[in-house]
Length: 289
Image 1 (cartoon, rainbow, N blue to C red):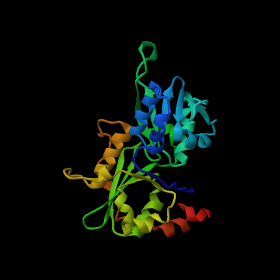
Image 2 (cartoon, rainbow, N blue to C red):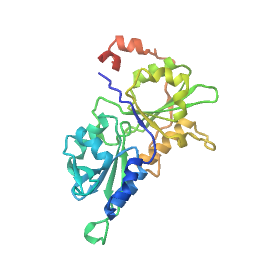
Image 3 (spheres, rainbow, N blue to C red):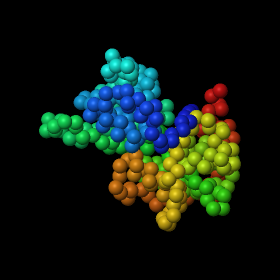
Image 4 (tube, helix red, strand yellow):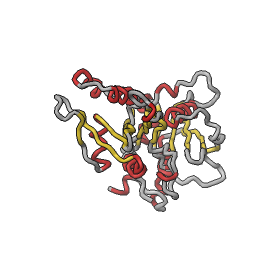
């Protein structure tokens, strides 16, 4: 099995380049609605449902079109600032989603939640879920022999790393504590998480910096506010992971999650990254160079 790690910094911020264009663009009701939804999901490609298609606009269209191998066109072509756009048939979304996920991108799926036949004016739309490299949520997007792990990491008061692994399809949680960058490296090789959830301040911590240098293409998702755990009895990593699940999967209840089990079993032999590579159990990016 060859593991390809995609590093993509995914901050939660407004896309300023799109906002700056607004005074120069005729703001139709549909476009106003699109931008409002996009503001709520700035670090994801927005699949905006229009009839039988998912449309993408602005930077999303410019980024997605070559990956999806679809034509990049424009709305208001004769305007001073034409709006880049592209689209895909909604019934073929699965294949297109796989292409974006393979590049380490997220996709926010925005559906029509009213029947256009009985609606006056703009049809109400909302994001029903966000698909991420780790939080796929659809068996059709996952091969039978692979896991899509989300890894949440936080720094403890004792300067160790609290790590939690989630496999969304099974609801299985595993939790452990790491005390060195080498242990984190071994964990990344063994489980090959598709995405890491963390706070930006962790980037300056030696324990994390030492390991992440080996995986320059790994997808990182920053949610600083999710790691402020003042009242919960749960660890910061579990609390942040649950907040991220509610954000992306639009869930009211997380009862499907299992109780966290030990990430490390002292009764089994732990193989480090060097051993794993030499046995060709897993192969990291460095082996492909």
